[in-house]
Image (cartoon, rainbow, N blue to C red; front, side, top):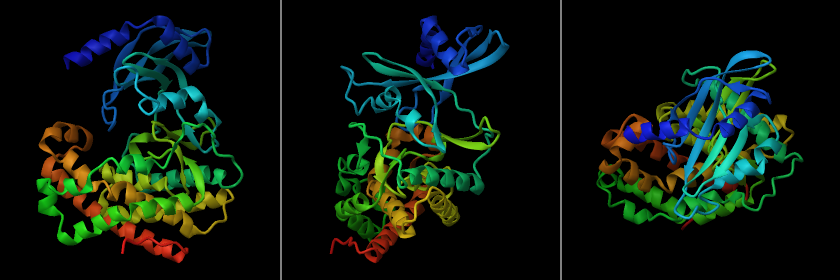
Length: 382
């Protein structure tokens, strides 16, 4: 923990004018004066950037009196030389003001200030605090799916899509085509647990991935966050006293098909062991029905099968195509401590928890093929 302690000391001694400027923006007060200050790690559960979130908090005062304050610093480590736009994608999002121009009801955390350094990008942002720290129940997922449906639906009912040239499109190509599917089957646990039948189903999906991509690109397109798994979502009480949904970590946002957002709300939550795969049918039914209702409330009158196809096809290619590779990475002995940090379980025990999820994903691929055929599209490697 020495390195962490050294970083805390460094953060505590940063230029006070920067922190004061950020806190005044957060407090909506140009005269707010910081009193005491503490710095601690906010979370170590980020998959890509587990060491990057830091909470600054303390007491302060202005003409309205004394009160607590808190803001978050996200540190994105960059490759030597500053990296590319892909490396600093969330920095682009924060600097663009894009999230401030998006329609409701899904909100983003407020971005206050950014600094790009030789080795890292610093993003100062709002500290989003949920109304409850309890595990999510089905009704929380239902509320979230409905809000996401209303949000996506705005882009299907007249709201223009963002036009930033750097926005991500076809993220599945970035995610999938860099991997070697056949090589992953050499991993001992893949050989032990993945049966011949399951492997044949997964390899069929891999062979058909370009056809799945074309189907997704033919569907109605919306702006999406694309990483709305449970850890990136907060339900809090809004200024009007009603629940509101706030999403953080906009490093994957971009343009994609209607329905695709549910691949992370459902699939990401199951993959990260935030929801048991044994209860997947309940989660699926509640989230999709509420998402569809949200689309309807936003004025979209398209066929429900289009949204269902976007959801099932994106989930199938995003998780199903990479699962043998993901097993190899997360279940290897070299990543044991990292897996324990992220999932609370590691090695073969984690592998066993994930195996039923792979079978479910392949069932989603079958459903996507059936929906595509019903809608006059064709997915086949035969």
